[in-house]
Length: 289
Image 1 (cartoon, rainbow, N blue to C red):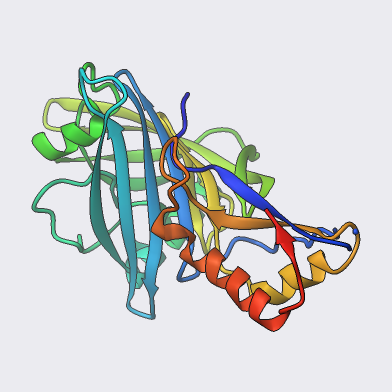
Image 2: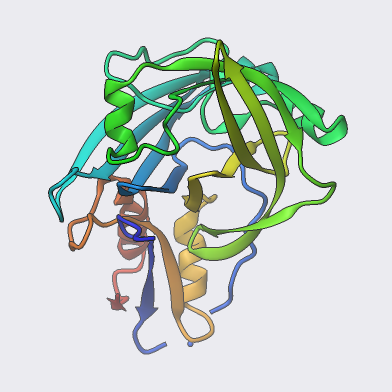
């Protein structure tokens, strides 16, 4: 599967100096986190970059950029930007997911999340082996034939499928994800569901991060979280410590490029600001990338 914008972590080296890798804590829900998801369909691959742009005690706001191939035009892409608001209460006890974006959508679908299973639903899935689920999606979303699913999402009607999501097995499955520049195997709970609305039926598969407080969707039938960058406390200090010890090298996560290009995406701004702060504090340093 061909992945798009910049699944890279740049390496910085402090000249004339020798790296201690810092342990990454559990994945928190933090404002500024960037999630990169890769999807594969008959029409080609897609990428979705979701940034948690606002987080308070009422709302989690995600700014989502989607990229997909243009049907019948090799090498060309279409892109779209969306906003999805999720109530914090729905991350606690909701049993709805809304997984597609369509022209004219409101930013907020009360009762629904789109990348997380709620704490209550996840706990039911883990403890009882099943939980009720309402899924807002398109019937042919997963097998969109000759059309890219992003185009399907714009043109087709959303339906709300209802049913039961059931746990698969009793253990966890390791899902590889690049977290802050480091490849990690994240433990996931596997689940399947047979959902229906009227005569329409779909079968879904999801793998959820094994964390009731942040049950992030790591994988579905057609999509996987491949990269996640979240803000670290005082990142410039961590970077400085790595560069000034050992072999004077450090990984710089959070850098995103456009497809096949040296053009930086806006999602790189946080990482670049970290480097700028570091260089201002150490004017005598010379760095190579």
